[in-house]
Image 1: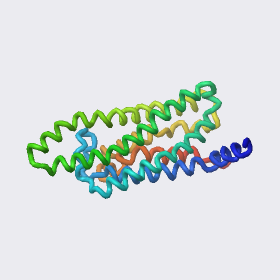
Image 2: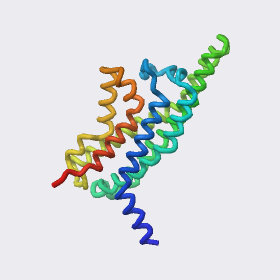
Image 3: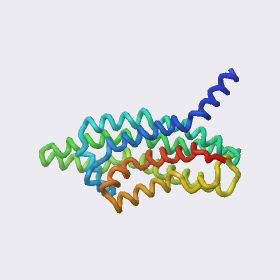
Length: 225
């Protein structure tokens, strides 16, 4: 039994980052299918852009994220091992923070398809019924916006904790990798969205998973001595 367990752990250590990159890449593609709108305007907070997303894109985008984003757990397991010398004794807190980030994030991803269909139906109804549907939407947002808040908070806190641990403590990671945490990569995507909307309209919705794809790639990269 112990041999099987060690064999599995060795396989995760060897391939975990690549499995996570695969999950993040497909999750990012799912984000684009689910959220991309040529006009952008994601920051408005009214989610009306979702009403223009075709149902087949909502369906495929939702399932790509739900099925493949969890694969990032394998990369996080490798990251944990590399940070372990710096977080010994506090591993429970590390995993708790991951759970509050990853799983609400997956749930939030799934709600976007329902939100898009709700708004599409609301727009197609007669005016009085449409007004009623949009009035109820403020309550509907309470069912998914807190999930997005947990995702954003955990994403940024864990990103900067990662950099802090590499800078200030001993880990198995090279110090230069502290400059490439997911939050900084995601912030770059947002800057591109604001400055070059044509490209940023694609990068912004894919930002979370794209930043994790690049992050896992950076962790996997080993410079030749």
